[in-house]
Image (cartoon, rainbow, N blue to C red; front, side, top):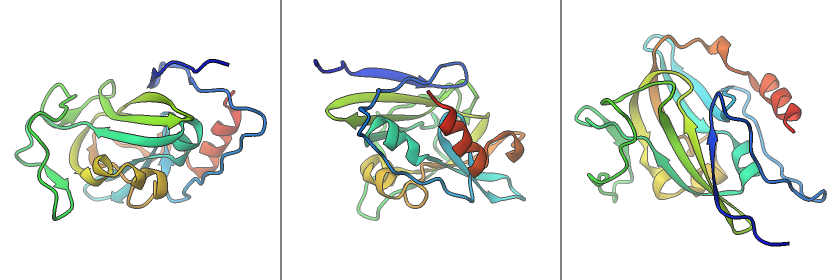
Length: 190
């Protein structure tokens, strides 16, 4: 059987799930954290402070199980980063000026805007996953370590592998899936 070509998969509200059919013997184990909410795009959300409304955002372990090891993570950058905090190692330099700026206006992201790009490798086939923002928000902080070391997402998706901290506009936790609902949704996927 020939190799599948590399492809780009848009993960969003209107797109259908697209994946590689695995052989009957393939089995991947992954966890779903109980203290998070989940989106249909396989992001996890963790409310950090109810008073100021900040939310930590990361990628569910399901993405690795479905699409393969994550080999690259690209986080959306605000065009105006004067009041923006990057989380980097003390040895790291600040991001280059030519780093991708995928947003349209400053540090505000709309529901249609690209939030995270993930490159995953399953048996030599690289897939590019484009994940839109699940809500309009302001990006407050990026975890630059996941861009430098994507294995953080593979090894500790719910801990050090977090991607960003945002302040959503009109965030309602009830519109997202809890652990049981997310697992039920995953069981219903073709």
